[in-house]
Length: 188
Image (tube, rainbow, N blue to C red; front, side, top):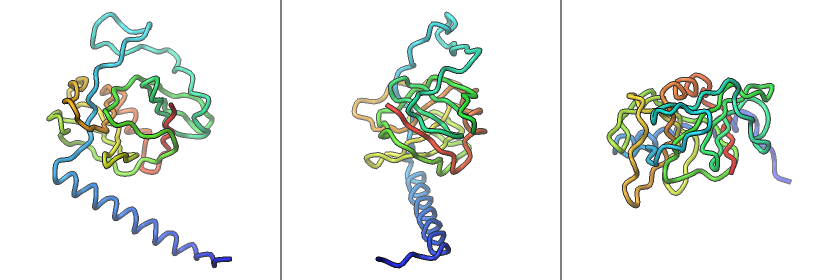
């Protein structure tokens, strides 16, 4: 039976890994490769205002998907193109539609890693509240919102984008809720 490592060795290893991840992200940011959402606006729900830019109005957040884990977390449904902010008692605090990028994370459990207050997306749009939580096929996946509140432009043919764009008020709520280390549960 292999010997167990002391707890300080685990902390050292995790710290080293985190520093390496930040360096990789910094190099990519310096090279201009940032994830940006780039898909059409989600279709309006029955509760949406008639205006094209209206957001669904909910008096009570939609039910949290049954297979989304427990405890305080961010739940992202790939199929519903929707996010839930869930408190420690499993009650939904807020739910909102999103515009996913062209690269989707696999279903599973992730954590918020690097957070960036503002930058310019690869589509040239100023974005804020960027919260990275996954990587797939070399593309970083993150939540963000456009500074001007706009929806993302259509993706260029063949573009690989991992940005999950949200409306400006939802981006602010997500930023406040999702500190580094917050669990993100991705469901189908």
